[in-house]
Length: 408
Image (cartoon, rainbow, N blue to C red; front, side):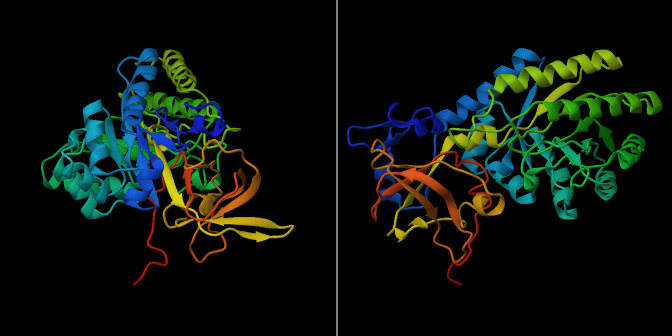
């Protein structure tokens, strides 16, 4: 990898620069890919994806017996991704019937699926039961009742994990915070015990363990540790009062990635050591048997594996104010900057090693003033037809893409 442009550190590990000064990803000239397939174009590095899957298994496996890694499909899911996960021995969590359908069509083992969602429909619950998904993460009492009925009608016993709302501030953007008290997700403490007792009383449900997920793009371990303490203390109380045995502990995901060179995420080993140590210490303190640990990384597996390519248009210079560099995509394929001010870096894929000389803002093509992909980034002089490459585009871009302003 060339050392001339520090932003290349944010690209997949296979990234290099060829003799023409073009960005090369997985041995492929990114400029040629843009010309051959058109832009916007998302390029995924398969080798990097596989490496990240193996890294999660290795780092958590080094610290804890038999951990289970379950990929959060909401970050990015197509049939090829599902097949890759199957080959790497990684589970899959889905949040809709559509994602479940992708998994089924790809031949993914359905007993390795965890079915999430804060408002699953009757049809989705029935589909999950009839198709034999491994676990449901139950989000509310109505879902518990529907699941109980559907399973009873089919003489089926379903493993479930109630989702707890631990009331933890994960120190991330409020729109990707999910474990605080004011959240649409999970059981608050006053309802969680009701969910446990009802599940334990049902002959159709197997209360396998507990689940929490506190947010996304997390750089700190302390919120995870607070959530682990809350969940283990709750499990110990339920054991004392109701004879509940915590067999599985699902700590969700949310491990952050490095989107900019001045905000680098901690190594995965930092999370693995901190979380597993807290679980082992907490179980020893509370006299609980060690549960199977489940983690659900999504962004941290796929986020840095993809690069988005755009074609540059004519720059608009406003003297003393700003220079806009428009591209042929924007919030239609990546709504994250408009939705919660996500920040990115970029390089010119056809001039990677040219010096950055101008401060510009990368503007999308959609009829919204908020359609700005990057505010105030230093780039070389741009010209119409240049190819702009934005790294870390693998998560929550394609899944949240839209047809805004497309022809009717």
